[in-house]
Length: 268
Image 1 (cartoon, rainbow, N blue to C red):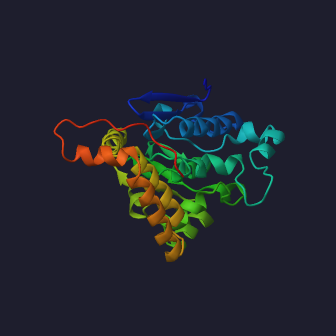
Image 2: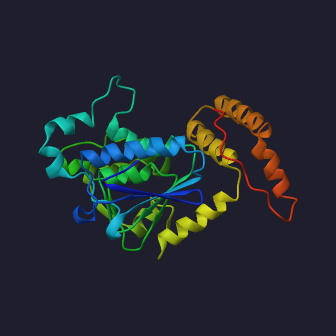
Image 3: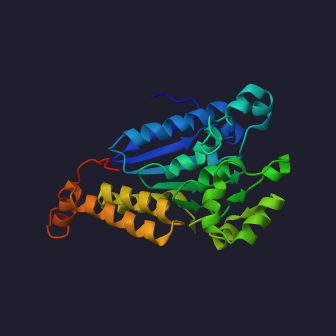
């Protein structure tokens, strides 16, 4: 599949997805929204992909929505927000929550600016590694709007409500160091891409089915009642010990020469 505004590169089970409008600080126009949605679907179908590393070209993650482009075409602006049912996800929400719905871990590498809509996209990742020069902000209020891209779903699991409201009410820009202290980023690193690749290699040494089950169970159970969490743990674990990759994982713990895992099995 060809993309105009993002780059997809798959190397040894790792999918590198790069927002690629560096001349516009990777600002998100309608086409880029659509391409993020499409690449998420492609990754979901490709069982050879084990990890996603999400980043931006040209030393910046993204400046957020391309306001001039989106406001200049009210039809496209409407299309990113339209949905059939109020409880379903529209295009704007899928580019955030869609990362959580993938059966593989997603790591965001944040350099330069990460504002507004881009912050919501990054919040959808499982882990976020930021460079010391990174600047982040939830800036919808500056345009007279509220955050509506499903980022709050992740934000409420990371920040106390008062800190989240400070950021949302003001639209203030914060540094990577402050973001780390707020738990908005997992870690600040001088080389966040290298950090992401080290984590990717660790994940590649584990069962793809276990990684997928851990991600699915964690996202679905984090705020669930205890009885549902216990039920899901039991169901997922039974499925795990019936899988071929569970037997391979057991062998890898004993053998000097590690047998490779088979492709991810979609059992849920």
